Length: 319
Image 1 (cartoon, rainbow, N blue to C red):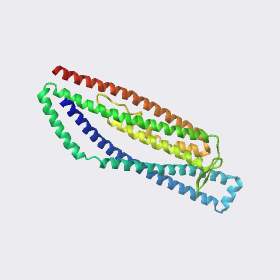
Image 2: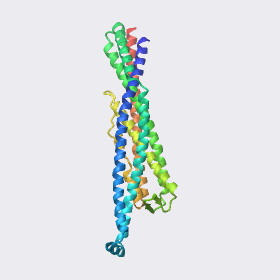
Image 3: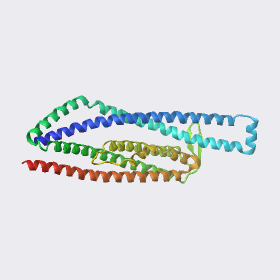
Image 4: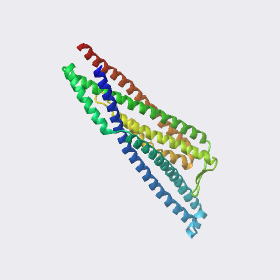
């Protein structure tokens, strides 16, 4: 009983230390993601301002503009530039929303970090390790090394299961948001023409402005959910053990899903059907990733039971 109590206390401390490590990694990752969003805002804003200048020149009087108007070239140039501007507006809006949500996530991570005293945990762990060593020297000197190995592997496996569960939950949340985005795009699929007015942003010719905002928000909610799923998958990757490896090459590719192509397809010539197809592909990828997580979850549970059985067999043999 004493060994099990010591083991339980040690697992609790290690779990808290793992939380500190995971939160610190997430803090660094989110800070980089916020910086990336800020860079995107600056880059797309610069490009949008350049287009505005071009349009101002097209609107201004000149003999060349008159000739272009007579030949219809000016209208074509304006349409091309407006299409580009529509894409940049959407990307700027999305990057701003990402910055806001990620900043909120960063605040939550920092709050959790301040609630854990890492130094106290390391001191308590040192005391526990000394007690376990003394116990094994007295009760199980011959099996001490193997019991320590089993205890360590059991602890890592339990932590891995926790990380997998969190990733599964984040994946299910991403699926929900993707489903809402897909439904919103489906309802908008019957509409076509979009216009851009730089004083008020995008206005759909055949859609009410609130419906357009709602569709944009659904896409953003899906994107931030995918980003959080991606971050949880990185935690699973970090917890992969030597005896229970987790292949993550296919898992962490969600960093690439920032919907640039979706925004382009959606705004330029209203190719909403293309956007729907892209959302559908992402849904399939998330489904497949969750399935792989569930498979690894089951294997981790089986492996944990085998560790417990071997440990119990050692103690039974000593009775």
